[in-house]
Structure formats: structure tokens, C-alpha cells
Length: 220
Ligand SMILES: NC(=O)c1ccc[n+]([C@@H]2O[C@H](COP(=O)([O-])OP(=O)(O)OC[C@H]3O[C@@H](n4cnc5c(N)ncnc54)[C@H](OP(=O)(O)O)[C@@H]3O)[C@@H](O)[C@H]2O)c1
Image (cartoon, rainbow, N blue to C red; front, side, top):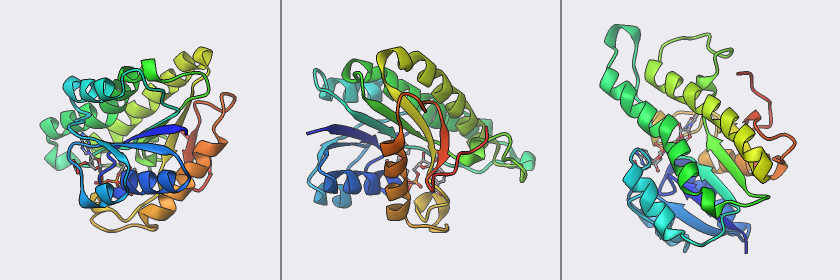
């Protein structure tokens, strides 16, 4: 059975990715800081205390997976804290870098021994990290942290290509979750279905691409 690891699996898009992958027959490992009754109800393997903003959190996950093969790693955990130009909060911006930019890189790096030729790494980013798409400004910490994640993903695609590991940067859409206060255009189930379709289409040849969950290729 193929093995998938998802961070931020306890709620939101990560939970729906876990549910959909389990339904597809994957062996799912839901990584989270603290589990939820919804995640437990899925009957998947759960690894707790995976704080992606700390090296210790990555070590917890690496230790739990020692010696095991990971075919798909989805870095989904993330935070959004609003920062406008007239109320910049640099601590909040640093926290978003730590979790949104360094977190997925830290987790991917910690699981490198588990990845193999044919494995896939998905980074759940945001079109808010796209420079060419930024026509509305603001959201300094979130936009900057996702932009940094995008360039990390581009480097990962280059560095992991010789190992046969493909990397995708994926925007989940505007999704009704806690992050958006329940606002959005689609539910997390629809977002997860699209994200998994994009991951299905991911190959070593198109590695390093940036796609919307609906399949649209996004500008950097
Ligand atoms: N919703 C949207 O419209 C939208 C749009 C573009 C991109 N995204 C991206 O999609 C991803 C999932 O977002 P969502 O909408 O599902 O958000 P959400 O409902 O707020 O869920 C966020 C998830 O990330 C986890 N998380 C946050 N900080 C963490 C940390 N330091 N260490 C480990 N886990 C942490 C949360 O766990 P806890 O319960 O422990 O906090 C939760 O599982 C994020 O990367 C987000 O930036 C979302």
C-alpha cells in the first residue's frame, strides 16, 4: 500500500486530504500538533506533536517514520495573520515565515531519507504568494511567507529531480475553513479533490510547477 504523510491533518484542507487519500486506499499518516475527533474517526495513523515551526517537531515526525517509505508528502500546515501597512507586526510576520516558509522545507528535509525515486512532494502554498498576481496589496506576512515557500519549492524541484522526486506548488483555491473564517468559494472536500488530481498529474517532467486546485497554471 502506498504511504502518504500530510501535515496539518487535524482540520481544514489537511483533514479532507487525509479523508480522500484514505478513501483512495492509501496508507495515511496524519501529522499534526494535536489530533482531532474528526481525524481520529478516519482510522488513519496519527503522529502528534508535529509543530512544523520547530526543528523538534520535524524530528518527532522523522523518528516516527524511521525506516519507512513515503510515496507522497503533502505539506499543508500553515497560518494566516493579517498585516496591513499601517499596522505591521514583525513578530507575526516572523511567525508566518517560520511556519509557512521554513516549516515545509524543514519537514521535507527531515523526511528525505523516507522519499525515493517516484515519490512526490506537494507544498500547499497560495496564489497570495504570487508576485504577478498581486494587484490588491497588503497581507505582508502571509504574502511574503508564501512567496518564500514558492522559491523554496522551485529549488526543491531542481535539487530532487536527480533523485526522481517530483515537487508541486499547489494553491487550494479560496476555501471555507477556519483560516478564512468560513468564507470562500469552495469547500475543503472540493479543494482536496482538485489537489489530489493535480498530484496525480505531477511527474518528474512537470516538477516545479505552480497550479491552482482547478488545474490552472499560475504565474509566479
Ligand atoms: N483556506 C484557504 O482559502 C486557503 C487559500 C490559500 C492557501 N491556503 C493554505 O492551505 C493550507 C491549509 O489551510 P486551511 O484553510 O486548511 O487552514 P486551517 O483550517 O486554519 O488549518 C490550518 C492547519 O495548519 C495547522 N498548523 C498551523 N500552524 C501549525 C504549526 N505551527 N505546526 C503544525 N501545524 C500547524 C493547523 O493545526 P492546529 O489545529 O494545531 O492549529 C491546521 O491543521 C495552509 O497552508 C494555507 O495557507 C488556504
